[in-house]
Amino acid sequence: QLALVPLVGAIAAGNAVVLKLPTDMVPHSSNAMKRLCDQYLDRKYIMVMEGGVKTNQALLKERWDKVFYTGSDIVGRIVYEAAAN
Image 1: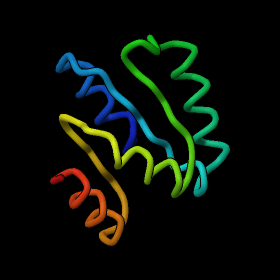
Image 2: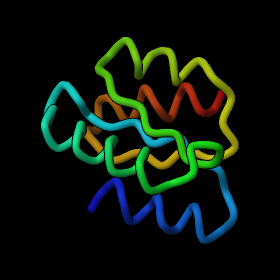
Image 3: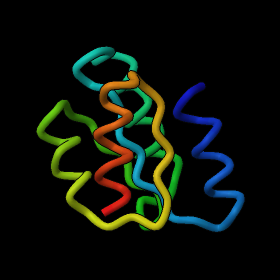
């Protein structure tokens, strides 16, 4: 639910979305969600990514208009700092 509710809101608002799933923590759930999203949602507007720390670091180097993050306070500070730059 922490991934899908923000995804639905972003889509409803007309945004394209990159959804990063916590593969390192819940690999089977992440894989199932990626397969279903890739199968049923238009990849032109919704890209689902799996990965761990390296994927997170690569995504944080990109420029984003909006970032929605759920997770720990420690990583949240890193995401907040990267988004501010």
